[in-house]
Length: 82
Image 1: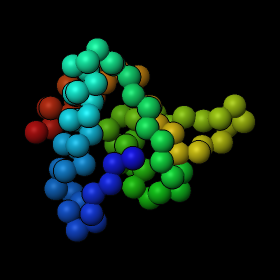
Image 2 (image 1 turned 180 degrees about the vertical axis):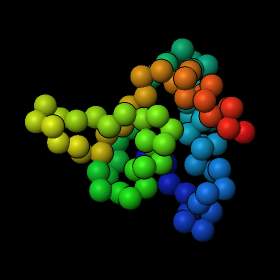
Image 3 (image 1 turned 90 degrees about the horizontal axis):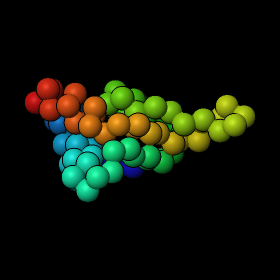
Image 4 (image 1 turned 60 degrees about the horizontal axis):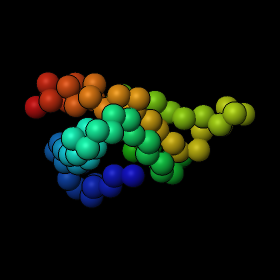
């Protein structure tokens, strides 16, 4: 989970943190990523806005897991936003 103080939301800090982690993983040869947090957190839309897919249990329940299948796509898309 990535947390930034509410008073600094919408300043690009979360995007920069997410991309720094993704960039480091790609540099190390890792091209996918999973993230787990609180399923009811209202900030979960942040991850979805950056292309994360919700991970559902076999019963179809969402427990706060997100995944990116290809971090290179995330990095290409977000670098175009800078």
